[in-house]
Amino acid sequence: MNESVKRSVRTWAAVALAAFLLWSAFVVVAETEMVILTRFGRPTRVLREAGLYPKWPFESALRFDRRVSIYDPRPSEFLTRDKKNLVVDSAVCWRIDDPLLFLETVGDQVGAELRLHDIVWAALAAALGQVALEDLVAVDPDRVQVAAVVGGVREKAAAAAAERLGIEVVDVQLKRVNFPEQNKQSVFARMRAERDRIAKEYRAQGREMAIGIQAEADKQREVILAEAYEKAETLRGQGDAEAARIYGEAYARDPRFYRFVRTLESYRKILDQDTTLILSSDSELLRLLEQGQP
Amino acid sequence: MRDRGRLMHDRRPRRWQAARALIAGRRFRLRSVVALAALVWMVWGLYFVRADQRAVVLRLGRVAGAPVGPGVHWTWPPPVGEVVKIRARETRRLTVGFAAPDQVLGREAMPAQAEFLTGDRNIIAIGLVAQYAIKDPVAYLFRFGDVEALLRGTVESALSAIVMRRGVDSLLTTEKVAVQQEVHALAQETVERYAAGVSILGVSLESVAPPEAVREAFNDVASAREDRDRIVREAQSYANEVLPVARGDAERLLRQSEGYLRSRTTRAAGDAARFGSLAAEYAKVPRETSTRLYLEAMEEILPRMDKTIVESDAGAIDLDFVRRLSSPP
Image 1 (cartoon, one colour):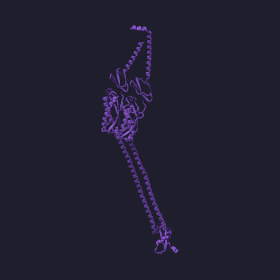
Image 2 (cartoon, rainbow over the protein chains, first blue to last red):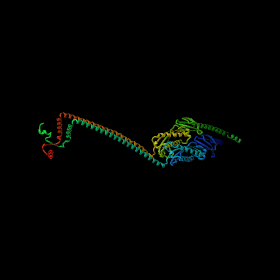
Image 3 (cartoon, chains in turn yellow, purple):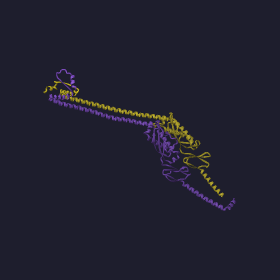
Image 4 (cartoon, one colour):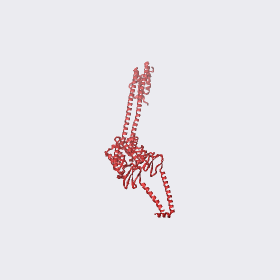
């Protein structure tokens, strides 16, 4: 009984040992990884492609992420050639290119980010220090050299990282360029002043145009009325002249009779109730009163 | 040894037979258990891909074949094989300049988050939404660690670059559509260069506005423009009123004067005609006509007046006496 139990235990143990040995004789490298095989701490082989590989059981596998990581450092302040302060928010796309070198110099992701920060910061400071603000920010698109600046930074950082850290810098993204917080207030003040100026200009423009239009209208009105007045007076004058001519013609036929009729008419107008008339009894009018017959 | 074995064999024949039978039985059970486990393990390799999904199959760590479409498939079960499924049809969105309600920010949200520098050294606040979809699942899954962060950085860089080339006025008014198109084009070009397996479907500017601190001043410019137009309109309507009124007055003046001319000449003609006929009558019977006219006039005039008749040879006339006589008692 003991023997059979011992034998079955031994069998199971043998099976387990065989399985363990089998299992530790292979390593699976995932698509997202690269693996360095180490023998008692000393690197022996680098496995770059995914798949199943044989290894010695006493070898262990150090795994590294093969994918491109995004390192997003906090925004930093830089100085341009013309002494303008800019806050730049960048992002670095990087991946491990040479795992052995990476292992020697950096070791892990946190370490990589620290070292990258310095490299990229230096490259950015150098590149930005060589351009003026108007080379980055200008309304004329030909003037702006942002792409060239970024390209330069990328190349410089890539070279340094590859040589020193075994890292490939895929890209450096210039996500945001802005003024520092303390400068923003003065920028806002300037913007406000500029807008006020533009607003004043608009309003003044309006007043100027309005006055012009009104003055023009008034002037035209005066011209119209003056011309009309001139024509009217001419017509009136013509009327008066024509009437005078007609009267003259008519009265010229018998001037004495006209004088007679006209005098009678003026008596009608002149002699009113306030007049006191003293008549002589031998006036022609009153002759009949005395004489009594024609 | 042999002795001992023979002795054992001799001593416990039934026990040995029983033990052998037990082991044989156990081995049989072992075999069947192992066979069953193997079967279950193989069945574990079946997997189901929905209509909106794609599956990437890995075998021994390596990608095996093209992404698999909808349906029921089989591959080597773990640890030999692995199936990674993603929602391939889904349109995903990311925001720049503001936080979508479903997003978790890496850093604190600030109004400065939306502030961009413009080409004329002003600051503008922009909120943008980009939509993207997965084109190549293998690249999406295995080439980049955080594709969303990569895309957000790409779109933000494109937006920055394009805003830094334009003035704040054009950005606020006429250039919105152009900016959207340019950001889309630039970001898409970069994404293709990265070969990240995604494609940007569209970019839209959700909000473009002056920063809070200067918004009032910007609004005032818009009202100033309106004021200007309004003042000009008012002046023009004044002009539109004044001139017709003036022309009307001018017309009236002319008509009046024409009327005057006509009436004056007509009246003159009338007076002349009347005088003419009277004169003709006088020419025929002068004494009668003149007498009649004279008396008619006297009849009209004399009743109105105070009259006093005095003797022709009265001599001097006492006007006081006359006045006393004619005034009422």
